[in-house]
Image (cartoon, rainbow over all chains, first blue to last red; front, side):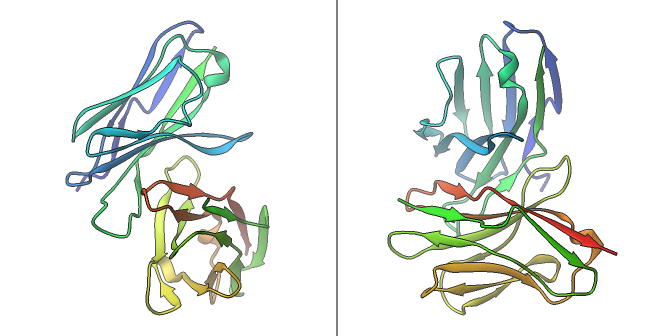
Length: 114
Length: 112
């Protein structure tokens, strides 16, 4: 299996622009998680889905952030408009609720907003 | 509510010596506990888990962890550290709804 796939790996954008991050989970996994990691705040859970349905979005910072999972093999995290404080590494992870629930992380997208 | 604490920001150990990275947890009900490792510029990587059964669980790269219910601890251990073990280690606990709470992480430095 190719593992969790994220794109792009790096994104540099200007403040105010829209940013879309993409994730393809491991085939057969039915839970998907979006995280943000910074030096200051560590690893933060933004939102997670079970069977394509958003379960908990309490970690989404504000209305500028939105996430969708239109099918079992694809999810997006969108920031509109982006701000410099959104600069971070964004990770997507997937897991199977049939097992112990360990998560498999993608390589991350490093976002820089100037 | 579930929570997990890693009391040490950093652990230093000499190569060849045993290492321990500490973790304590708070859960309602039976705990699902995990350890993950993160190498520079990489995503977190699953090392091992405890769900039920033997209190000593073995994982990848020679790591093991001991579940101690009375002390609510789940410390990560390795008998002989390698320089390549230097990384950021996260302890985590899963709640019944499959949301996972991660600790703040402990940076391990193994000196040659």
